[in-house]
Length: 91
Image (cartoon, rainbow, N blue to C red; front, side, top):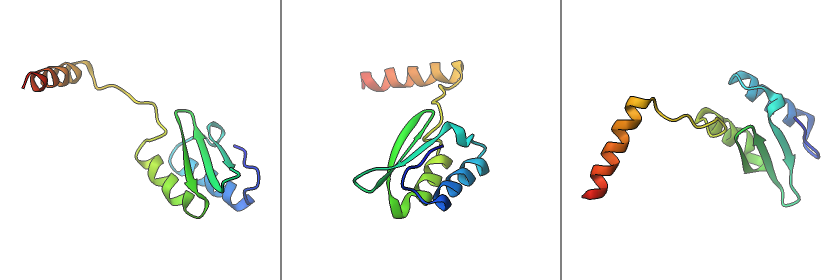
């Protein structure tokens, strides 16, 4: 976890948000860009936030699994979904 030009409190807040949600802070990078946006990169994605709102928005995205690896549904559900999609495509 790095963060040039970010306050120590912001870096600690990021680590706390990640730990509270069972994530490894070492797997995320944070940086303040020249345009004033905060760039947060995780193992499976990157997002950009206005500096004044990044903690709440990032927490919401973590809770919605935006930074988690996408997992396909189990085989039986996947087959049913594919069949439904094929039926809908035929109209």
